[in-house]
Length: 134
Image (cartoon, rainbow, N blue to C red; front, side):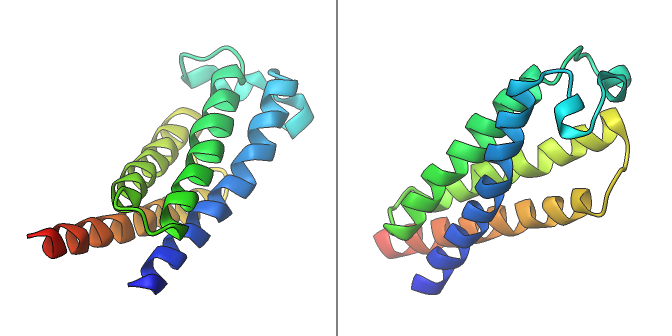
C-alpha cells in the first residue's frame, strides 16, 4: 500500500510545483502578459482577467495538492478522498480551460491524464481503507 500513497504524493507535488508559480505569476500580473498570455484569450469565458485563475491555481491546485501530498505521505485515512477530489478538480479545470480558451498545448491532455491518475489512485486508497475498516 505504501507505494500507492507515495505515487499519489508525487503526483500531487508535481501538480503543486507547477501551479504555485503559475498562480503567483497570474496574481502578480492579472493581465496575463507577465506569463506570456493576454486577456484576449479569455474572450470566450466569463472572465475579464487572470485573477480568478491565479487564485485557483495557487490555492486549490497549489496549496491543495501540497495538503493532499502531506496526507498521502502520512498515509492518513483522508488521503484517498483528497486525491479523488483534487483529481476531479484537475480534470474539470482542464475541460473548462479547453472549452474557454481552446486546445493550446500537449500539456492540457497530459494534465487531464495526471488528474485522472490522481483521482484513480485516490479511489483505490479509499476503497482499500473502507475494505479494511469493515
